Amino acid sequence: MPTDGRTALPLFPLQLVLFPGGLLGLKVFEARYLDLITRCLRSREPFGVVCLRQGHDTSRGAVQLEPVGTLAHVDEVDSEQAGILRVRCTGGSRFALAAAPVQQTDGLWTAAVDPVDDDNHELPTPAMLSTVKALAQAIAKLKAQDSLPFLEPFRLDDAGWVANRWCEILPIPLAAKQKLMALESPAARLQIVDEYLRGKQVVQ
Image: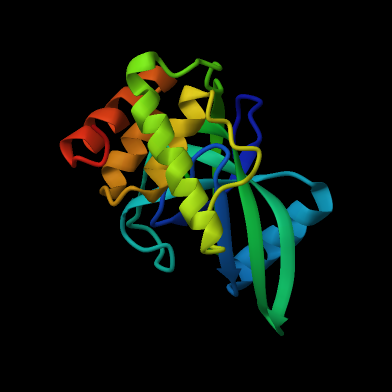
């Protein structure tokens, strides 16, 4: 347990990167996570999503978690069948692990964490407008297919929001997504995304 006044945050290690403002759908069936979701619903408190760098969450011991994660706020819960929950969450603020995670007797990971500042609102620069326009086009196409993975409102005037949404749908390695999510400057994050898209000739 933390001894410096921090509260231990319950963690849900996953082989994905949750971005602030992003949507997360979970199928929950393990007892430790069923209990976690129930507690979060009751307390209206979030849990932490961290990307698994190495190992499997179902095993004990030898796992490595990325040092920066994102709070997940539970929005909707449906009981698919006995012992199985469908959960929809929204990504909140980021956090940094302040100490090594601890695994409880029921297998749930917890850790003391420090908050990471939210992105400042920054307008995309004129040089980024092609990337913003391309995202708007992608949103329109996905919406027409009824497969939109983003929450409204669409904040196309926010460099961090645009960068985060691109990062969610681009086919880039988890390690790259993790570095982009943890990057403090939203303008720098969008710049990297823009360079990637131009390199792939997605935008001109």
